[in-house]
Length: 145
Image 1 (cartoon, rainbow, N blue to C red):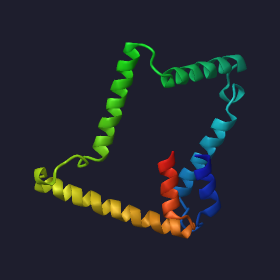
Image 2 (image 1 turned 60 degrees about the vertical axis):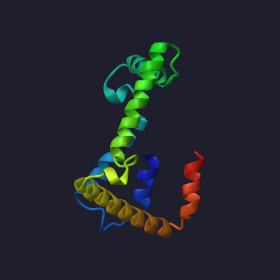
Image 3 (image 1 turned 30 degrees about the vertical axis):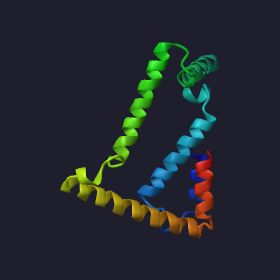
Image 4 (image 1 turned 90 degrees about the vertical axis):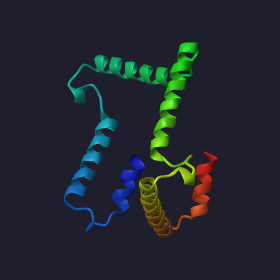
């Protein structure tokens, strides 16, 4: 978030960043600064209570990220993975479809998604060229991680 906001601040076009867009950017920057500088005093609470809540939040995050050690944890992990797979499936509804099985409406929807993808790819390619970033190198760096 920080790097995205910094990029927008440095390379924005003043003519494009007006009214509502600038309002949202200002709010995002303010929210980021609040998160960075948050402490007990800024929330009108005792520092010890604030630290207690922060530690509790850290423990909750660590416990949810920790690998499951019991069969119940494994079941929870598996159901979470299934939800993620289902979510990906909704993003790519025709990924495992056979061409012969698609209805006319699905073909029309697929064509619309294709056009949207091509438009996005074209715009991203143009942006990468303007930033002098090699597209193949960028894709290779994403594949490595």
